[in-house]
Length: 365
Image (cartoon, rainbow, N blue to C red; front, top):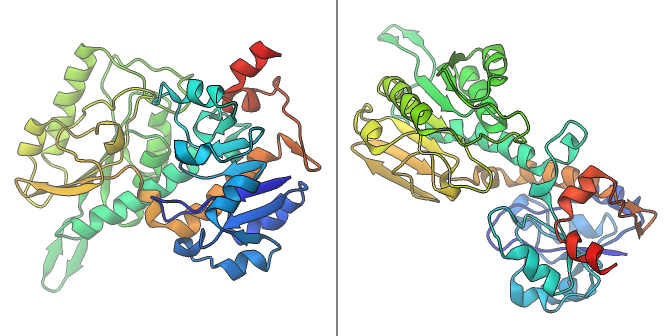
């Protein structure tokens, strides 16, 4: 079977890096890589061919692949040129795109979506979302430090003392915890808030101060996402956030509710009261933003407060992000590729969850 890897049109990352190719070959797969697919992740075509992969045009990869891999899905037009029995591997986000499942089923295509892999301990090594979130949390702090007009750590110098920056992290999932750890390493004072009670000990273990607002719905089955809260809780949360935000030098927001618009945690009224020079990094910008003023994929200023809206900060570190992504892919494929053949065990929770086009196949069988 041929595993084809497409060059990303919008990202610098690549889904497979050369050093992991032997692992895919061990599954009995032949690899066909689109020309220059890894160039922006620091991997040229020679690096792939030296590991036994074949370099081809985009058209050839689309037409030849039995399994077609990409980070962002191919276009509808491109999908018309693939084999009918092809298996697509990408991030389709069927919980956001309500049409994609029926569309692919109508085209007779089978598709795995990496964002549908259950976020469980068993699937941890395959969890693309967590891998990318960890990088995004780290990068968010570096972006904040770049834009902040002052130091992160406390410094005592002959010219005087500099107090440490205060960082407020909203959402203590994978990205939030990495933000906390990175900000602490840079010497900042860190506070964090999350609706999930389990996050308290994790925040404290990293040296952060946990902010508690009583009465949150805590759904441990939400797969690492926040859950929607009632209006009374959101009001009290906004009041508490506003108090902390007025003193914060940096706010990093990471809260997303799966399949819904991100909750607004930092309204315009809060931004209006922040100190000049403060920075907000909104990792939920692509789903509406935790900051009311965020604009996706833009850096803006409001009353001398810098607001960075970017949900894809992992793409700013394409070399390591691609390596982790590639490892996630191979760990996932090991569950359903055996000796060069498909082994789609629908009793396996990981396979059943990720193969989101399976319903029509089951009905027609």
